[in-house]
Length: 112
Length: 114
Image (cartoon, rainbow over all chains, first blue to last red; front, side, top):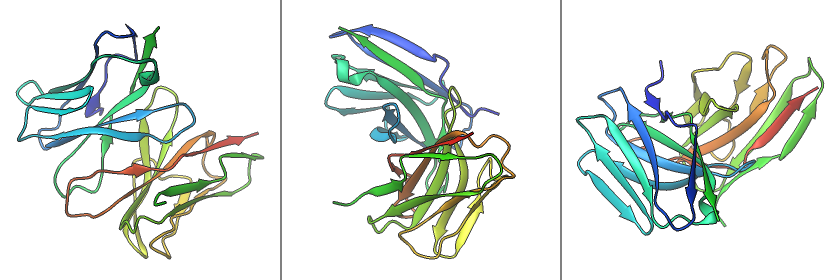
């Protein structure tokens, strides 16, 4: 049972344009969401997070939007840069939960 | 420099041999985790530990074992009972347990069983 889903395995975006990565979840207990970025043969690095009391969180070029009624979140990267080419994982949890539940990842390729 | 180290980066073993992957952190984090990554499958939790001398099975614990004798260290043993051990293994840690779960990852170990 995949509780966190990233339905697009891959995405290609022109450099300078906006990249939008999507994530859906099914467990209503989730109230905290994270995005991780991963390069090949390296560990994931934390990118940005959002709690359910907000619907938007920004950090530089990265913005995460949360739509609780639709159980959907998205990561926007503007403008996209070649160094953004990586696999992006969405993860979810709730306060006090010892586990993170990860999606299967979306491979983003930025085209110069 | 605080962080998580995993060694070795690449590991080759013959089928039927047990192998132990190292994970050390100097972040003074309480909780530590082991994940496995396979192509197209995201990160799957093998084992986790919230305090020294205690650990719990994750979603795919069969064929693996762990120990947590020190706060800084959480080694993973891949036993011969693991049917498909070739994968990329990631260790992570987390500062506390009564907060939001933000985990920080090590660089990973790629295990190839020949």
